[in-house]
Structure formats: C-alpha cells, structure tokens
Length: 153
Image 1 (cartoon, one colour):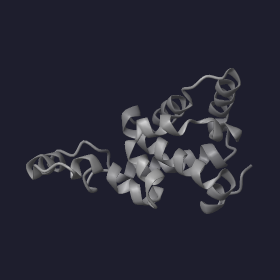
Image 2 (cartoon, one colour):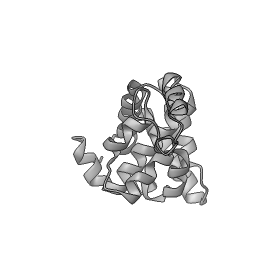
Image 3 (cartoon, helix red, strand yellow):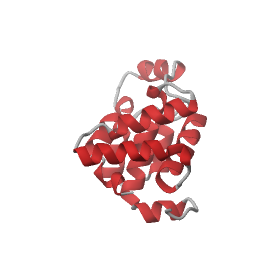
C-alpha cells in the first residue's frame, strides 16, 4: 500500500480546496465534509463575501452533491485502501504501474474507477476521493484502517 504515500498533497488540494483547512487548522476530515455537500455551510471562500445575496443565491441553487454520495465514496475508498477484494485488484495494479513509471494521475485513475463503480459523474466524487485519501495519508495507513475497523491485508 505504498502507493498512498506517493499521492501529492497539492494534487489533492487542487481537487478539493477545502482540504487546506486540515493543513492550516485543527480541523479533521469529518469537520470539513459538511462544506463539501449540499445543505452544508457555504464554502469558506463564499463566507468572506460581503454580499449576503450571493451567498443565499448559492445556497438556494447549491451545486454540491448530497451527503449520500460522500458515504458511498468513503466505503469504496476504504475498500480500496484497506481491503483485498478482487473488485479493486485491477486498480491497485494500475496504481502500482503509475508509481513504478513515475507518473502522476493516480487521483484521476481512482476517481474514474470509483465513479464508474458507483454510476456517478466523476465530478461528483472527485472532491470526496481527495478528502478521504488526504485523511488516510495524514493519519497513516495502519491507523486509518484500524480507525474504520479493518486491518490492512
């Protein structure tokens, strides 16, 4: 599972800018998740906007995916990182190939696989994938798997 360490934090933050809150505060993945889903507080960038009408308009037409997407993506990421099922065997092999070749794009590959498995648009899951991968990197692989009740296989 050395592939997780090879993912660039900046690449993840570009996909989900809210991740910078983990880096520069004491917030956790679970603290940030509400900012990424429909019905949650407005993104931090918007909270600095002095025109409350813009914020209300954004929230009335909230383009963010619903919370149920995040739960589905979290389960898939957990299986990818900590599981050993055949479901993600091909993806694990492709990730290893990318790492061995010294290429980037691992996040894109993971998003494509997971969005296909869930039948969702890649854009709907990319931020969640970045968030959960970032969390796993920060906690550490063994600690992350133990925190969700799984041992690394």
